[in-house]
Amino acid sequence: MESAGPIESKHSFAHRLKVLILGDEAKTKEERWLVQKLDFFILTYCCLSFFFNYLDRSAFANAYVAGLQEALSLSGNQYNILLSMTTAGYVIGQIPHGIAIQKIAPRIWFPSMVIIWAGLTASSAACKTYEQLCAVRFLMGLIEASTYCGTIYCIGSWYKPREIAKRTAIFTASGQAGSMFAGIMMTAIYKGMSGYAGLEGWQWVFIICGIITCPIAIMGFLYFPDIPETTKARWLSESEKRLALDRLPPKKADGHNINPWSLAKRVFGSPAFYILCLFATVCSALEAFCVQNLYLLWLKYYSKAGYFTQTQVNTYPLGIQAMGIVSNLMAAVYIDATGRRVPMGILACALQLVVTTILFIRSSPWAAIMFAFYLAGTSYIVNPLLFGWANIICQRDGDDARRSVILTSMNAFAQILYTWWGIVLFPANEAPYWRNGYIGMVVVIAVMFSLLWVVLWLDRRTALQYPEAAFFDAPETVQLAAIKGDMVVDVTKNDAESKVEGKANDITTVASLK
Image (tube, rainbow, N blue to C red; front, side, top):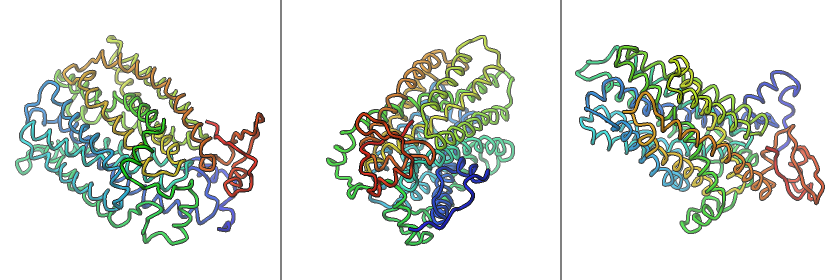
């Protein structure tokens, strides 16, 4: 396709700001228009879906501290077990969902799952016993497993490597926004609807969450475009469908082959599976202070002594999600702008070490403890780091089925941790101080720091194995290292693209600088 001419002055502030925020520069007006369409239809649907996914999850935590615990006579570590039931369903559903979307159109699969989990959310209001709630939470986890890695997979199917981190961060931030809105909504319902139609406020939260989730499914059925190779989206022209494929690393002809033996060999025969699954587990552990709702439990503990009102218990933790959204997006902007990921991993480790130190000291004043809980929100930096990086690494060989299974396996391993992690290290009945959990976090930080260099090695290794795909990860102004014999030669992205076209055969191996 011939260039449609420059989009705008490359030296203008507006242009530089747009590239910084949105990612790699579009080469033509056609490409810019295509990316805008993708953002509107794909990112909007996925973000709304994840927003309501997290809204439904967070509604449970807020309901627990606003009457659910007393209504169902929950005690001891039953809260942690309920969280673990959701996690267990979530883990079991990961790989089946990842394989299913290789054969069933995502525009059918994803919205269908949304409808089912909306119904399960609403049915939570009818639970009368602990056992009933366990069953519902398990099924919700099983169905919700389709959302996160399904979206990460689709982002990696439509976007260039230099566009992935920020889209991943925006998607993840939508879930955190759902958590924030859950607290606000819970507060409003607790004040205004408790006792209406004979139902408690926490029951209305589940019912309303289920009802308002359903319209998202309709949007998915109508507008989600599947993947570039099979899309039938009416909002994409034939030339845009071709461009969507041309702008991405090459695909394997049998990249959607899910023959069990073949797929197993492709997945387990690569170090990427083992390294990235371990990395995902450790990154997930780094988010423990937020995931286990420790601040909420801390506030709940002291509210019994009259230090905090129910409204404060529901709203104060919103600051953690706000911190998570800001740090998540800032990390993604840095990653896409520089192509460097290790510094963000180091920063995440350093900040969580500060948090852990403050919380570990029993004599820390309440102001310091509350500051530490809010600072813990910076652990969400790992989201664009982990799945953005993994998506790019796995994208290079063009095997989409393998990429889908690795991504879902990563999420499964990350979640397996929480089937026991919270029960052992952060039981609700140990509030407000979790000594074992704080010690465990120090170990996690040390392991996380070490693994950054292992993943960096994997990144460089795959770039050398698939040089043509690695060129797509090169920024316009960041150099590529091209090794020719014993001589290191610097090349620009234009040179790299020439190689993809077969015009620079003298460059034998290429790896982007990280």
